[in-house]
Every structure is written in structure tokens, then in C-alpha cells.
Amino acid sequence: MLKQLHRARGAIPSRLRRGGPLAVIAVLALLLVPTASSGNYGDPSGDNVGGAGDITAATVTGDKGTGQLVFRIAGSNIASSEQNMLFLDIDSDANPNTGNLTDGGADYSFVVDDTSYGFAHWSGSDWVAATGATVRVTGNTSQITISVNRSDLGNATDLNFSVTSLNVVVTGGTTQIGLDAAPDDGSYNYSLDANGPQINSVDVRTTPTAGPKAGKRFVIAPTALHLPPDGRTTPATITPESYSCTATLGTKKLAGSGTGGCTFAIPKKKAKKKKLTVRLTVNYQGAAKVVPLTFKVG
Ligand SMILES: [Ca+2]
Ligand SMILES: [Ca+2]
Image (cartoon, rainbow, N blue to C red):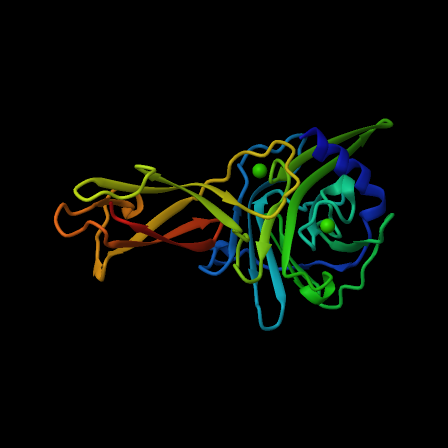
């Protein structure tokens, strides 16, 4: 949290640029419903401090054909005034070690208030106004939508991003900063190909570890997902939100039970030396990745 505060504090003077008018649209609750093909990212409600708006969710939808990316940020009391702003920082090369290193490696940044927005690019030493010909910003205090083409984001295909709500109150020469950072640490990842986070690999545990045995139970479970580097200072294991299995034993479909149907009762008869083929699907933040697994029954 402290790191986020420093990052936000340092960013205020140079990034708050008047980029254009903010078109106010009516509240459409339907817009908040994530579609099947989008990255869906959550942030706890009520974790905002110091009067800052409370970010509760973000979705990203990308069109592979046109390269248009739509960020929808939901919350309460977000981007409500010039003092209570909303930042969307984009690490367009999904590399926290390039761009503004004190800002999670961000290469592009949006700031939105109740009447206007700014769009900036990290020059290598400072935030400078970006052209943003494809940018459109709309919304209200419960949802801000930022639409931008990847052509205005260094042709990004795999990116990291974070959303920060910042409330700056100056009273008698004292500046107080209120904040909500989403995520709390590091960045979210979005890949156009995955329409959600890029899941590079999946760690899988089998029980027993030696593999399936005729007449015994065999259980498959994903234990960790590996995403691109996200700049987290305290990385914890990422586990899928849900997972499921389909399987064949030899040429026949084998039904599973238990969590995700990933527990298999291997038949006692005629199973030995047969090939067990499992397709494990993991779901995380709107992305699905299929992990093909093959085993020989012992
Ligand atoms: Ca929040
Ligand atoms: Ca970067």
C-alpha cells in the first residue's frame, strides 16, 4: 500500500493533463455484466481510504481484428472531482522493468475526473502528453469506460495494468492523500489472444504422484498458475478460480467426479497399460487455458 501511495503521489503534477471532455452517459447496469470474452478483475469493496473512490471491478475486452481495447472500471464515488481522480496505468509491454520504474513499469497512463481526462506516455524520463487519436472516455462515478486502440499503446498485445483511485485534499498547506489501488500489489495482466490474463503454464499435482493405477482412485488438481511478471512485491501463489477435467481411457470416455470432475475411478479390469488422456481446463480472471495430460495406467 505504501509503495502505491508513493507512486501515486509522485505522479500527480506531471500526469494531470487536460486531454479532452469527458462524455457523461446514463448509468447502464447492463454494461457492468462481464461478457464471456473479457478479462474480469476484482478488487475488494470498502478498502478505499481517505475519501478516495472505491474500485470494485475492472473488465477488459479486446477486438483482435481492430485492436481496440475497452477498459471498464466499476466502483463507487470514482472520478468524482478534480480532487478525487481515477488513474489507469498501462505497462504496455508487460515488463515492469521498462517504462516508469517507480510506477510498476507503466508506459502509458490515463487520469480521469468528473469533466475531463488526460492521457500520457512515459518518455523515458517523464510523463508527456500522448496523442490518443483513438481514445474515448465515458462514464460517471460508478463506472468509467476507457476505449483505446493498441496502436496508441505501442501496439500492445500482452499488457499489465493497474487502476488507482486518488483523493487529494489540501487543507491549510497540508496535503492528504486518499487511495484505493487495484490490485493491492503489482498489476493485472491482459492478453488479446487470451481475452484475459496470459496463463503461461500450470503446475499440476496428481494423487498418487506416480500416476494412475488399475482399480485405484486418481485425482488431478492444478496447484499454481504462472502469469507474466506483474511487479508484485509479495508474490503469492496464483490458483485458478475454477477448473474441470474431461478424460478418455484408451478410446472410451471416462467420467470423473469430485471437484471439476477431476477424480477418476480407474477400472480394475482391462485398464492396465492403457493410455489415460485428460484435458484439464483452468479458469482465471476470464481466461481459460487447456492443459493436455497423458498417463499410462500402471
Ligand atoms: Ca476497492
Ligand atoms: Ca513496461
